[in-house]
Image (cartoon, rainbow, N blue to C red; front, side, top):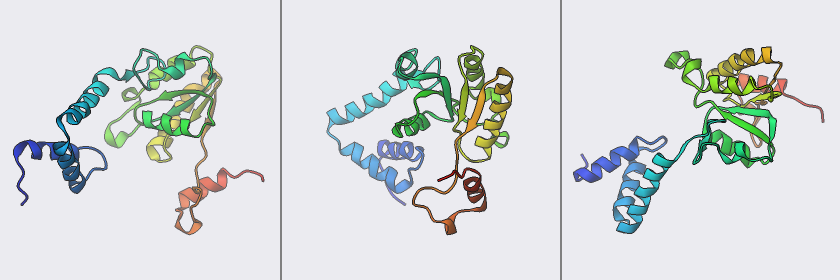
Length: 199
C-alpha cells in the first residue's frame, strides 16, 4: 500500500473525483501541484475559487457567464430567430469552434433520463419555452447527444415547441470523418443513411 502524508492523500483523492482522472494521473497532478512554487500554487487555487464564485448562468441562454447576460446573447451579431439547443456549456464551445452557426444557444444542463430520475423539470426546459413564447424564435436546432437520453429530450422539446409554430430540426449524425464502415454499429449506419444528401 502506498504511503502518503495526509494533505497529499487528500489532494490525490480530490483529483480522482474529477471526470476522466484515474489514480495514476491524480497522483501525478497532486505531486505537480505540491512541487509548484507557492505563488504558482496560490494562483492555481485562486483560479479555481474565482471560477467557482464568479461564473453564473446567463439569464437568457443558461450558458456560463460572468455577467447577468453572456456576450453571445447581449451582442447584435447573432441571428436571434434560431436557437441551437445543447446539453452542456462545453457543447456551445464545440459548436462555436466550427464557425458555422450564427444563431443563439440554449443550454439545458443535462438531458431527460428516467433511469437517473432526471425529468423535464430538472433541466432548463422551462427557460427555453419562455424564450419560444416571445414569438421571436423561428427554428430550434436540437443538438443534444445522439443517445437515448438526448433523443428523448429532443422529442420532448419538439412536442412542446410545435404549438408555437417553431420549426424543430435535429443535427445529423452518422459516420465520423475519417471513420470506417466496418467499425460502425447498426444505429450509426442507419442515422448516416437517413441523413444522406445529394452530391
